Image (cartoon, rainbow, N blue to C red):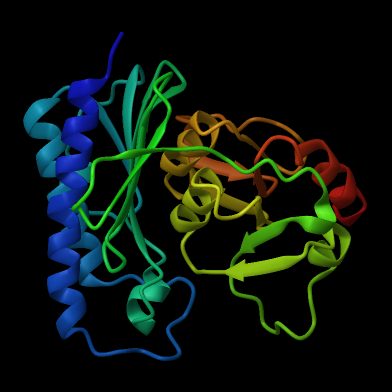
Length: 271
């Protein structure tokens, strides 16, 4: 089965949500000390915008979304097809006004990710995939899409790792010390980090949180896999979507695939 229509709807929804977010972002008063769990009215309005576009085309599909909004509560429950939505991934970056946020939209059918879209509104970057059709990027909207491929880095010591912002760059965490990469890139948005790996702009994405949710990783996971990479939790298990609670446990490791086993082995003693 092809998913061209689903991709078109997801891209259209992400575009409309991105425009809404940027209008609010321009007027938003910066919150320099915004906490990790911050949620804004823009998150909720973005989610309603996305849901409206999806339900107009696919009214019987189910939804799994981060925010508690009217549209997310009043929807059919159909486990076969689930749209997984993060209306602003990295709201902390939105609130701090550093541009580190994304819109994440994915479709899961029968447990498999069929479509994934990660839009970065402030940076005007877009990365997307259909199952079996590769990963593609379109930046600035001025050039035709180009295919994404993960890196070919084969040594951890030469790798670049992307992760969430740490408390101190001067004191690397035990996880970074175990991987011993050549460089570390930090950003608030998991969508951005997964897109970095898919685009070949980072070798590894490391998430050491005890738990996250389906909407934090689903859209970005298909990007990495379709670009030739690998995604598991830190126990080496592939994430499963659509389970009760939409909770993902055991952290996350996304890589170019070549480095995956070595990275898991290096991190084993830390968990």
